[in-house]
Length: 282
Image (tube, rainbow, N blue to C red):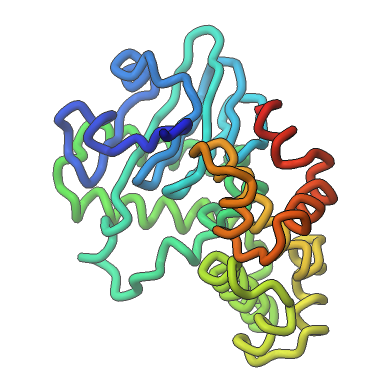
């Protein structure tokens, strides 16, 4: 039986547009006041806080809320929140195909830093100089979000504005190339982490050397390529431990570990707890 439920767009939209839902955070919380337990979504989701206190957790990492903090989530990520006081801001939920009518690139969302699957890129404070424009766009969308083309065009502009904050040097061809390589590497990890565990395997798919890949990851993310691969495996293990009543042996099999004891050692070395201890603590 599922421990962490998957919330569908229709559950939280209350009859609103099923492809896109944009409203004030205060109104959203009134309609979904019971949505305080850990859960996942089958849609993309982001929230901008303009007032209020508390915390929220994404994939087991906890963040303290501050004004103008924004967080982004992709389908499948686990999160929960604990709010205090009068919460103000905006919440946006949208289907993965929202941009298909205005963009030729089907992978557009994966090119954005805040939909990378790395929690460190998904939570940040909006730059002060960008706040008036961000506020104007979201206010306009709250008032009129019935036309998908208008909404998707507005969000496309907003996403590109916010994405630029994390890529200050993309005007240089070398840096643009490196960021593209890194993004492709992260996408390959997402698609292959259960079967490919070695940096050299990913380097071959990217047509670069393992040393180049490792140097790239350390320069841009401060971690080695091997650590990024390991972290994605560990994250999936954590999700499986809390999502369903899988045995540790079943999770080891799901993640393509040949030996249950090796999986336990692998997990404990990274987390500091055995899988069963982690499950009990959560």
